[in-house]
Image (cartoon, rainbow, N blue to C red):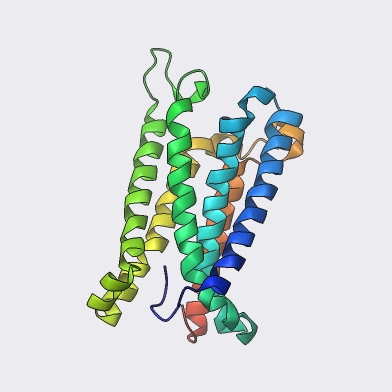
Length: 226
């Protein structure tokens, strides 16, 4: 979901797919170690509960990677070959976000996420805000995805098309809120981190923050492609 010149062919898809699979493996192992091996989660919750953590985290990583390539090119031309991976990475990130939503539906209840609910079974306000932010982020992310369809992209003026693509950054900012509202209260108590491993919510927000800092530095440099 980037420049119209980012053509998708077999070679430009294989690398993003491989990156995504590696990301899912690493985040899955991290989630298992933190919540099952060191934490209180039973192994019967691995198929959905634990895997969903890896899926959601990977979605943030892949989407952020898509928007990090452009700024990296401004600092080093060695990243230019990666420009063709931006669009596949963006679309894969959207796919992972959609999968995260689908996997969350059957387990989003008081038994899996006790801390999200009040004693009367209703959602806490922070949970409602997080769910609203998540829904908004997904809807906003759909816009650059649709704009990446060749027939749609060809009908848009270059400036309009680029503005639509940058909505993906807005989606990531909203995602920051979605994630932070769920887990910020556990960020500042390292003694409660299972196995001393930082919460996935903290790591996800950290990735988005680093991306925004990178793009800011690239803009201040006043050169290159973003």
